[in-house]
Length: 102
Image (cartoon, rainbow, N blue to C red):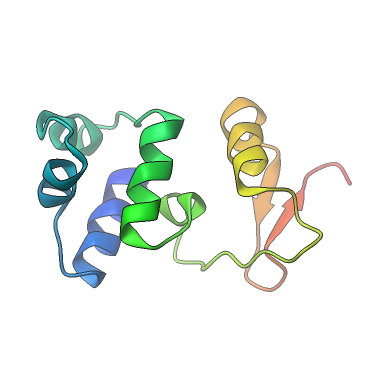
């Protein structure tokens, strides 16, 4: 699943829509069309979307896998930046995120 599919799924689970979410956050609803077209929001926007939906930013990129972190895992912000910059984390269904090359 891509970002837009996951955002739509999470919104549906929470009883809202991406358009309603944008309005609540004071963001142009034209962003929804851009996201559905394959664009990604900036990191700060993803954090705001996740906070409003009560989920993790990484949930927007999960492919049917719920990501579980533990206290030794890097912060979500660091994982997100590493993922965007280098794609260095592997998502697993048992142990959360594993840095590649370890």
